[in-house]
Image 1 (cartoon, rainbow, N blue to C red):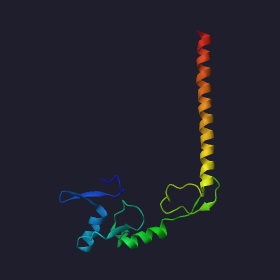
Image 2: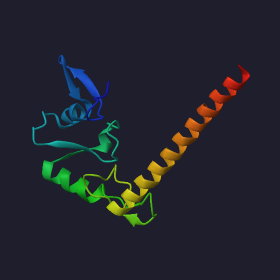
Image 3: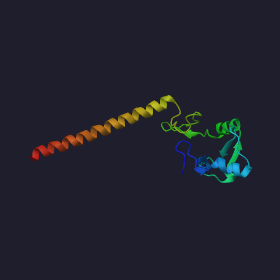
Image 4: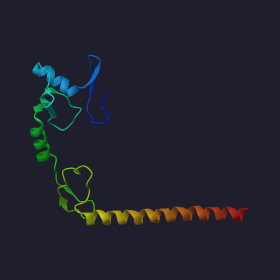
Length: 134
C-alpha cells in the first residue's frame, strides 16, 4: 500500500500504518527513530526501500541535500534556453522567464481557438448537408 500524499510505501505494524522506510531503518539501527531524524532515499525513489538506498539525516542536512541536488538545469519549453528552475517549482516550471511562459500561453490559446473554430465549422456543414437531403 502506498501513501497518496507522500508516495511512500506504508506497512502495518502493531495495528498502525507506518512508513516502510522508517520501519526498515529502525530495524537496522535496533532502536526507534527520533522525531527529528529523517530517512532519505539516496536514489530519489521513495518506493525503493533497500537498506543501501536509505540514509538517516537531520532535518537540516536533509534540506541542504535536496537544495543542492534537486535543482537540475533543463531547457525552456518556449525558447530552448537552458535554465535552472526555482527550488519550489523545479518539477512544474517549464519556461525560463515569465515572458516565455506568457508567449507559450498565447500560442496555446490561439491553437485552441483555431481547433474550436474548425470543429464548429464541421458540425455546421454537417447539419446543412442533412437539411438539403430532407
